[in-house]
Length: 324
Image 1 (spheres, rainbow, N blue to C red):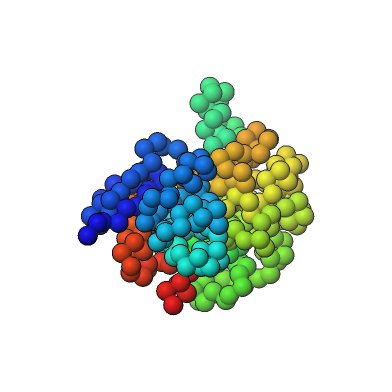
Image 2 (cartoon, rainbow, N blue to C red):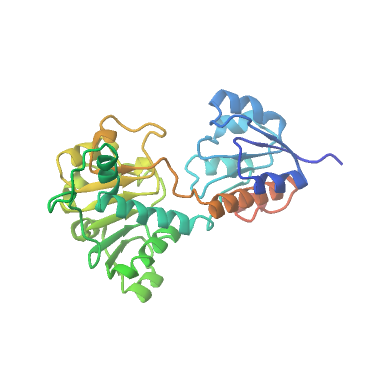
């Protein structure tokens, strides 16, 4: 019996590829770049399954190009690149990689928080440029963290992990979510609050919501004006949750103290002016970039895809109703 054929849209950590090869014939995009839309559409036709990336849009056009596909396994916890209702209508299972990047992403949110509040990147560049002439009492004064208020917008797995890591800094935690988070309330005495209250009271706001029509441009000019002028905004969720052009204006006008972003509205590009803001820290979507997280993401995506192409139930299926 012929082994299933699968396509991997970009090279992944070896562990995931090796697992796939134990069960499938595997072809991989040989170039370290996202495939152009037309390239991917041309390639998926001959495969039983595809291991896709967040940069690959999986929609009706993609399903038309692969009428016999048995599943798409997404190498990401987010899945805003996948039209899940359309996949369900076509009877095609799709999956993501939940749980394995929670700590890595929450750690990165803290790294960004520290970097922007204590002006780490700005002062590093100043020193490297040979501008520093010795210690001074007014140099690179930043924001305090200990005893301040941390606002969590979206208290799912990652938002919860981010909040729990605040314990060493004796922070007050507010969270905004549709569901009561008993872990945060019991462990931190955190308080569920309205979005407006989180904006008004928080010294740091960390975003952990999925990208949905309701969250696109959730953070905009009016929201920035509602925040404290001394507050910092951290985003490790999805770029379009923030209106980036309006964020640039808010940063330049010191409406808020600063922002730190690992994701961007128009990845891989930043909007004009963002890179020139001294009170912003930017990293290239690397929140999950640890050895264990990226390896476990690859293993989880491979496990899901193997299940799909061998007729088993994918453990992280986003549309389990396709199994009847």
